[in-house]
Image (cartoon, rainbow, N blue to C red; front, side, top):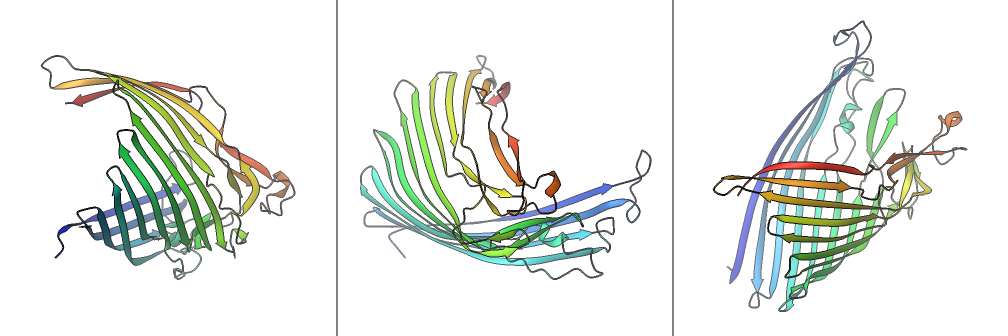
Length: 373
């Protein structure tokens, strides 16, 4: 019905099954008898089905493009637990969810090497199995499912260039999250609970640049800044959060700098990965005033392809060095109550301590790949 109109459609079917179990007591080999010495025996199932329809409508001599689309999603999540140490009663719980995820985008080619774009979309996510197995075991019949899907409305807009000078883009984004999933661990039952907790807004911008030279040398760089805060306060199992507080575990910026060079079968690459500071959470989930420091990791890779004359297969050798300078850094952390204060590891803790997950030290390795060319 339109002069230049390209329609695309497709879908995905996925099914997942999981069994998790642990048994206690008895001499080796420890018996595995449900109802006798099982801490838990659990079977989880996720069934997922989606179908999408999208379009590329080109107007004004193909200088303007519109991209409407819609995805229909149906998923079922469920869990079954046998009677055990953590489950006084056997049972099963599950729920089916149906989503409609619309999107619309546009692009305007205002010069031969330049275009401007804007996109809007909505996506949803069903709760994971922790929202269901936590309902089982405390009564003969599982408690009702109360967790709602989490969803986000996203807007992206920017300008892109691709021409003789390379490729570059600048863009801004806004993500509004609603019914955010949150989790809490009950040490008395050994069960993780999942529930909805407030809303948040992520805003920021990205910068990208890429340039290839005729002698095989390439340079690239990108930078992203994110401002992530709660927009709605709440009080839940993981404490109290107020609007305006920072979201935890979200770096304020990320950046990558890199250079590569290729000549025939030889390839070399040097990359510098930077991650900005991020706010840490108390063990209860509340945002703490403490931040994990920024860090920087330099890595290198060199490869060589070798293929004998007339052979159908070749071999690629890759030598890599991760964390070239052997920097000490932490990739994540939480704030816990001190030894005498485990009963209240929240913002009210008198002597909180930070437990960090260290990043990998310098790592040197060699990969050998068989390639078909």
